[in-house]
Length: 319
Image (tube, rainbow, N blue to C red; front, side, top):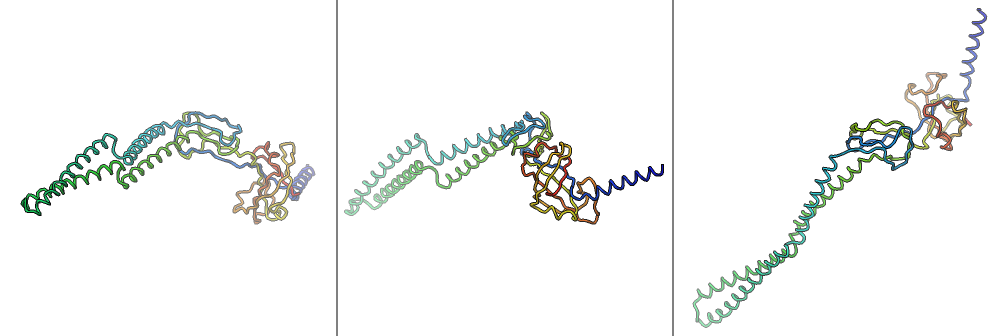
């Protein structure tokens, strides 16, 4: 029995020694770039148009929100725009056709009074030089002449303003109100478009976090997924093995669970890790004092890795 224990111990020691001595391979994990689709405005889930595991393309509708508040805001904004547009048009066009007719009649009447007063003062002027009328009579007629003249000039200015519209400052103010209302309408249209949750990129759906009828607040992650053709491989390697795995190195990878499928890859990033807690290798077969590095490897042909499951084991060996 003692000999059996010794043989078993020697076998385990040889197994561990052979495992530790195999420095040509490193174990890591299959990873994919993740993406999260969130809401911009709050609303209840009205429809979900995708299912977990399905593949969608950029621009596809993932879900539809019910946002009744947006419809109410749209009516308010449209009413404000109509009011501001009418105010601006009134300031530009000025008086109506009926008002212009009244002002033209007023100007014509005042013109007749002015011309009559002008003729009267011209006649009295000659009589005054011949001393045929008193100065008082002439001064009274001259005052009436000046009054008729001023009324006529004021009426001309009034009709000119009516034809040309309001003063420039009033027109600018009305235009500003109109543009502000147009901005409110545009803002409501943007909010209304957010009821449709759209896929930003080609992606596979990993999880759907809400069900129909549940409330999605602004910024809530409705759908999580993986980007298409974004598979990469992550390895944690101590510094004594990093020399042959510099950025740009070509490597060979094997997926044990997938009938040892062989994949050609390339090292695209080497990053030092701050803590050994990020170790991803299965066997801590190195000195704890060694610095650790995270190696990112991408397949040379992204379609070769599309069938691999995320978080499965992959073995790396330098070329």
